[in-house]
Image (cartoon, rainbow, N blue to C red; front, side, top):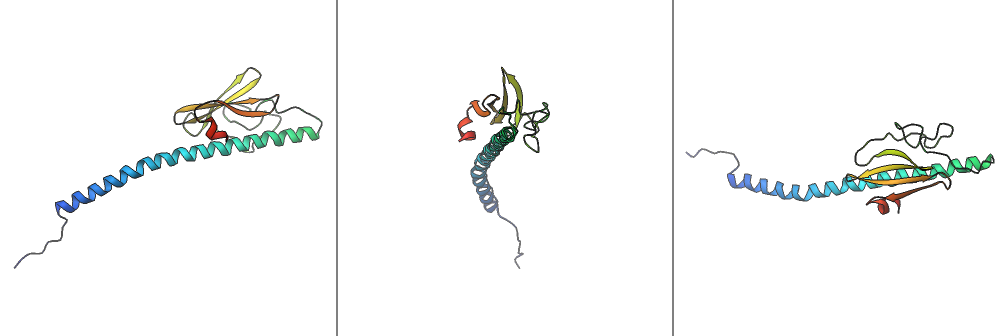
Length: 148
């Protein structure tokens, strides 16, 4: 009598390992690209919200007879885009973090303010011009993708 055994052969195991290797070689680069795309989308949404809030604050000021724009977009370096202490910008401030997909590095640039958004390890620097109310990307490899 022949004894029946149910197990995988070495060829079957090698075949499964090869298939898994091929799938991971395709999936890992796609996942990386998807992560960057999500960070770009987040940045674009943040920028649109910030610009809209600047215009909304400006309209509120015009109604009261004040033609000026908000002087800066943050109260402290622990929360961005929440207003300047006397005026509210975004209802929920953005917490700075020095990593991809996050805002960080607020600084005074003459009479303006700069904010940095990090993507793929590189900073994209935005300047808020308080005399014109513009929030523009000045330097960075991904400026056009964030603002188009």
